[in-house]
Image (tube, rainbow, N blue to C red; front, side):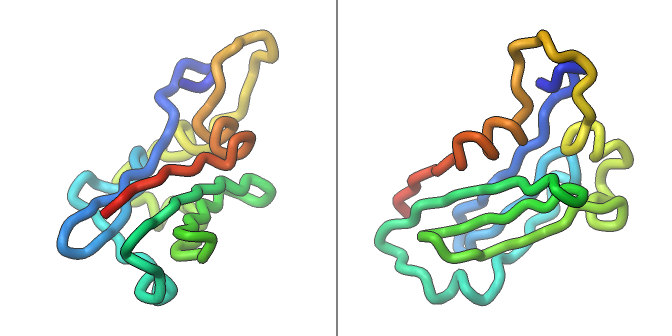
Length: 119
């Protein structure tokens, strides 16, 4: 949750016959996006995922697999057509400095979250 008590955004990776992703609180539940062509060159034995949220100019989500960039998306009203208040969840400004809750953006940015998945 954000300091304003909004549910923080997130992402999902679908491990089906084709591995795809989706951004929660941005796209419809049925929306799934393909990774870029770099993904096809990555080993299928072991995959280490890293997600970075760059907020230096808007909100850009960068997904790496085995240290190879496989997706880079700048979230906009057009891209997040499944949610008219996407920015509340992905880019809400923090108004209070004394709350101990952290947004998903802060956690990903500070920890450079890595998710190890064997597929």
